[in-house]
Length: 249
Image (cartoon, rainbow, N blue to C red; front, side, top):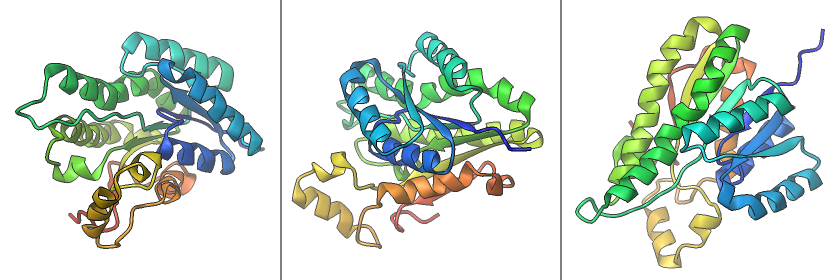
C-alpha cells in the first residue's frame, strides 16, 4: 500500500534558507507549505509563481508566527487545505542587532517573539497530532551564534540558544511516539542578505571560517532533508552544526 504524501510546513519559508528548504523537501516528494509574514504578500506571490514554474508542489500560508492567535488560524488553514503536518521546520527569524548597552526593550522583544516564541506558537497546535499518528519531524533552525554568542546579539543569541533548549526537552517527550525533534545551527550562509554586505565586511567574515567560504543554502537544506526522512528515525535531541568549522564544540 502506497504511503500517503507527507506534508511539510516551513516557517519563514520564502527567505533565502527557507526557499532552499522548501525546494529540497518538495523534490523529495513532500507537499510543502511555506509560511510568510502578512507584510510580505506581494513578495510571497512572486515567490510562489517562481516555485510553480519549477514544477514543485508548494503552496504558501500567511501568518505572523510571533502571534499565538494568528498562528493558530494559519495552522488550522494549512491542515484543512494540505492535510495533517508531518514535518515542521521552524525557520522564521529576524535580527535587531545592538550592543546591550544600547538595546531597547522593543528590540529584545521583537527578536525573542519571532525567533523563539514562534517555535512554541507553531509547534504546539501540531504536536498532539504527530503523537497520535506516531510520526513527526520537528527541525529548529538555530545559529552558530546560539552556540558561541555574538557581540551585539544578546537578543538573537539568547533566542537561538533557547531554541535548542526547547529541542532537547521536547525530544524526550516525543521519543517513544515516533516524533523526533532536532536543531540545526548554521554558520554564515550565502544568501541575498549576506551578498548585500560590503565586500570588506563579507571578506572579513570569510577569513575567520576555516573552510574560507560561506555555506550554500543547499548545504543547509540537505541536512534538513535527512532529518525529515525515515532514515533519521533514531536521531533526536541533536544540535547539528553546519558552519564550515567556524565553531567546533
